[in-house]
View 1: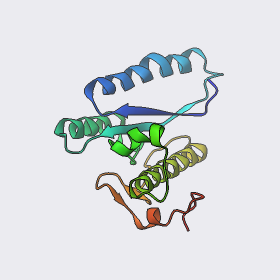
View 2 (view 1 turned 90 degrees about the vertical axis):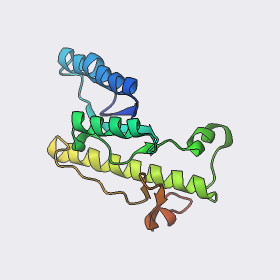
View 3 (view 1 turned 135 degrees about the horizontal axis):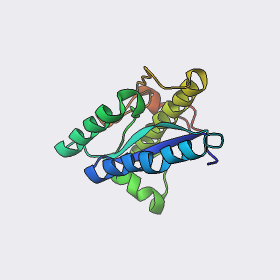
View 4 (view 1 turned 30 degrees about the horizontal axis):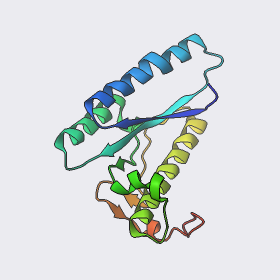
Length: 158
């Protein structure tokens, strides 16, 4: 228990949805119950991952996740299923590559949203009424937004 925030990454498949529920109820909640003075972590949110928007069952599972945990508790940024993500480990990445820049913009949104979620927790103790609008990449349309196109090699958008 050496973390302040936990992101529950959830593939949008039925078994993964059950896994997220089990992770929270069988691991996180017992830690909070059994070690109230030591367990000082918060769940920053559920991060939907490997969503294929062409698969109706996955979109339905995504909607079920939002219904179960609440819109505030599910990341707006979605890590969709991209072939490029699978190749990062083998091929590395380059900000000069169109697809790599898209992924960099996606993760810029993910980190920005995480920072804002943490800021909300620090100020209010919760993420109630939390809303995030994509700045760098629109996951659902697979489009790099203008700010995402301006990300420099140092990772800073100007």
